[in-house]
Image (tube, rainbow, N blue to C red):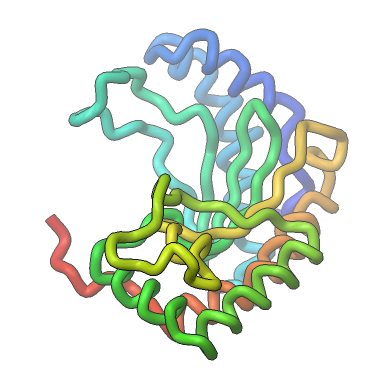
Length: 212
């Protein structure tokens, strides 16, 4: 496989079309475009990042519609990951992120214990502030109110509201998306997120609950 030279010129148009016609007929007709302009470059991008961030994989393009009212069969973006680092391309451009999109109940309990702790919680607050100065945005699903039993005056109440925690950066479609330099955007965003990845690994870790 040759090195990453950017996503194909047809990548964004492919997802524009899929947004308008999310059907098996469209997918079958355009699959060669997906393979050449989207999936192939994503594999190459992950391969270039592998020496620093580990082995990456491309997510399947099919949606799990078993429990969803939305029965459209295909995802409207292509995602790749070297956990906990993530990258995706779609009609809205490129996104690079790092963190836990969602936490299982045992992870959430460990996370809240760590955030409540003065030393560990302040370390998280400070590293997130540094990450934002490096150009990424802090996000993740949050409770609308404070967790049950938490003091509303807690100094890290906003962090305690998180059910998922990640940092991300987005770029709208532009020329760089189709150039080798696109990989540097992802690399720098992932580097900015590495302190969060290390904090989560040290204080939360993977879920120990059995998979259903």
